[in-house]
Length: 396
Image 1 (cartoon, rainbow, N blue to C red):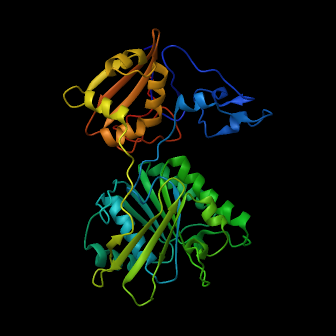
Image 2 (tube, one colour; image 1 turned 60 degrees about the vertical axis):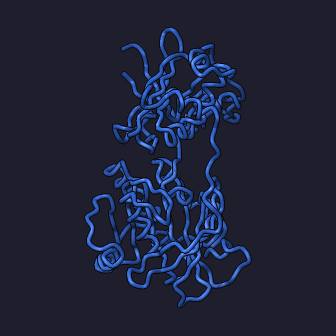
Image 3 (cartoon, rainbow, N blue to C red; image 1 turned 90 degrees about the horizontal axis):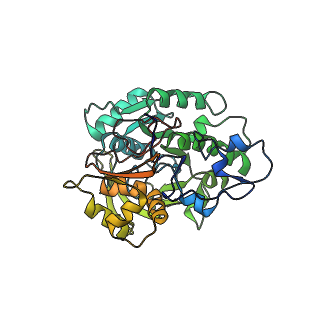
């Protein structure tokens, strides 16, 4: 076929059927080649001046989504989790790994099933066997992988993680327990070094659109802000997308508190109680209810039109305006779909696609109750990780 079909992806530039938006700035993001990741500016790094993107260009592109791994707790970001020695961090890590690898809800939070790599670098396999048996019994699980040894940063760890992700491209979650085990022994303690070390791991997580959780320790000194108790400098939390602190008011207590802060999610405080028989952390209560994005009237209109009885619609942005009986302009329709493509998929199971034809741009909306909710892109645009991941570029 001479047409190039496009579905939402990192570098998709989607405008209305009337025309394209102009470029602005010294070097616009639209100066990138069609198959270039817009987060990778190396293509323009040899050109003087700033690489800019206008607000119009910003809304005319669809960017990689980061749907939650655990609703309200873990997204496809990089987190640091800290706690004092023997407070129960490793049991919490085992619990997170198990629930994500099985898709079973955790503390009432919805969990999206995915493959997990758990680097339990302060354990051995016999201890892991006993721990997992005590917590979950005998349970076959081909989605959860353990390793008790790994290289350090700048000494092979990056290659080991890349190799695992290449062999298991459907991986969603990696735990590194602990940060001290993989940090370069020669690193001095400074904000710059802490930030750079964490940023190296974050770069891998961002590249593969996964969640990475790095376990670390708290310092002995108390602080008014609980996150000031992270051992090291503020560079560790500064480079991460979010952080957890697990602490007890009394070491012998079965009760603990898990506090969360993040860039793009509300702060949360979860009160836990350890089951003395299984050593599983059970929910006591949460300080605030899980925040949910309010309904979007535009998406509600689409969901009322595209459903099991009417599963497919295709046409130009102008046609869609008429079909939805909206006063929105065609370009605004397209931009709203670009911004909300992942929410449309995750909440309403409606995949948004577009393609260029000789007649102009065509939009397709497809209802599929079994469509993948991951909606993720890998680094090789034009491919998908699983057959059900609809929001990708497909060339025919």
